[in-house]
Length: 364
Image (cartoon, rainbow, N blue to C red; front, side, top):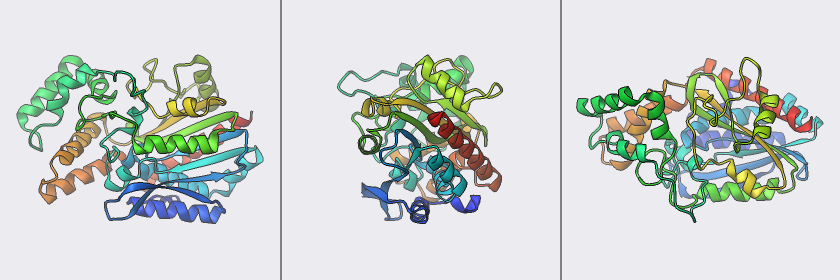
């Protein structure tokens, strides 16, 4: 076993080494997918993949981290702990479930402490058909200049204008406008891109290689930044399909805490577009797919949004003073990773439970 706190890391390079070491300890081969750029500290970047179990298993659980780079501090910790968890590994093996760990879907964002990829794209808005006209997010277009003002911190006038927008239309409308995804502003928040990103293309190749023979696939994608601190909301991650939603609830839900959905408004997340789980349907059409995003809370919504606004402002203004830049980066980390043992304990216990439940669901 490994201590819970020991499984987590403050920087990407450390997290990657712990994941690789965990694979060695578990006797697993690692399949690295080298990123074309270097990390913030000059380190190599990679989406690392390890399969624990039979390559021809009919039942496959996928556990992924760092879809939104900076959120990888959480997801990596879960994966590293799992690799050292003998009881968990024996559970999956005994029930004939192979487990595919994908560490750092977005290694560039993880390393640089950003939520987006090196293309400034929100990976979980990037899975649309770019051969067709892209969606237009008119509410975001009206907010864009307010969200990314010329100077930072925002002036009192800017703060008042944003507050007025929220007062008039509500926090829920503000969240939907900002976070649902937009494809018009390359430098903006929650930009879905103009073409598939490196991470998009790479995870598709991983699915083709490792999930092409599975008959049943479960996917737990680990996220942070929404909801009450430390609470892991289980958000249905699939198409608007009643049978799949019912299956997810049977596996992961309880009467007191059902699996939530972006389709019926029960989730803390807004209705999104271009989500990564679309790739499971497209690359693995032979399989019955059931997935959740395990979304852990950190700070209140408007504080998280403020951190994202600051991060995107800094990306536009690399000439910013060092103390301001350092403060923005620290704020980003706090928005997506609560650096306490209590929070880390909540993360591991809830993820571990969800993984056990997925194995029971797949093998049931």
